[in-house]
Image 1 (cartoon, rainbow, N blue to C red):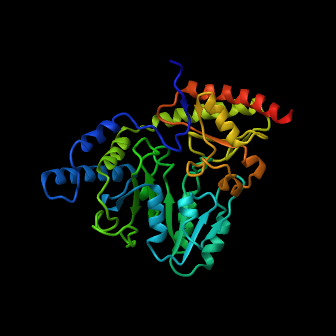
Image 2 (image 1 turned 90 degrees about the vertical axis):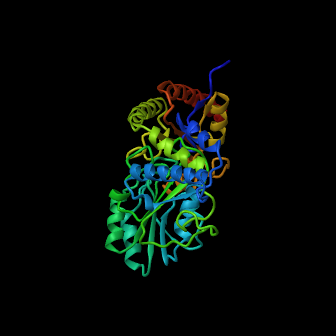
Image 3 (image 1 turned 120 degrees about the vertical axis):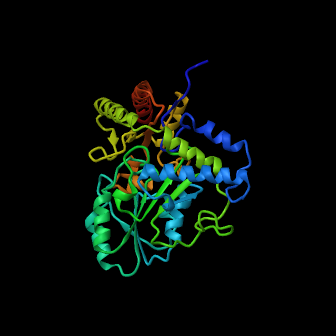
Length: 370
């Protein structure tokens, strides 16, 4: 047998952390409906509430703030559609589950690093009347750029606006505290941290009565109807229990070393968000003159899985909206790929990618010029 493929697409989905599958299998072996009054149902309810407490402890929130959903997309939709906002402010790097939900919103411009222009945000806030929501993606899924959330929250408080933070990519990669951030809503997802697909969380302060997107049985204290995904919820709790931040510090060093090596090799490589705070596991870079899809296929044939960008659009060939909103030249943006590592990444994985990238840069660019 040859070497196993190298997986460097953790921002799309992370492999299950050790212990997650086993924890889920226990629940899958028995009938689990937390609404049932018999012993099986009560056991399921205990499992769900145990995971709810684990999540609340992890992000410094009250368990009653936790609403289980089917994923980050539903949670984001819930915030935007569940209240009659008169004004919604978002950025061009927001996830499609925010950017494509409402027919009308104001878009906050970005600087060349991908950071929100706070002066523009304040101009918008000064002119708003009625309930206003600012929706911020805490850590960008493509570039890893981290937004200045403290400054956003301070402006929101100054103008009596509310803040929703999409922390799907941030959870497990940087400290996330619902209480310290001072936001009103937070979105989380299980499969980005090494939990299962199909489980998300909306964290919401009780001052809001969001109108449910899904109605029926009144589960999740009336917020979200439908029998809870008990095995998936247990898997999210197990993933949070098994997660360690220690490896993130190591990944940051490895990514920095990789980026320096590639810059020394190719002077015109472009690394997005290079000079601002980013997630420790994420590098978005452009190989000029070689389209993203060509690179992804080249690396896949070499046994290395990377992506063209956001997982929701990585199967398409269109230029990344987010990178263009960051001011990237469209021709350069169509040559960008994302390398994202995680809990099972080895230093040698990034070194092999670096070697493969150098080879690709030499052969693919040569092919373009011949």
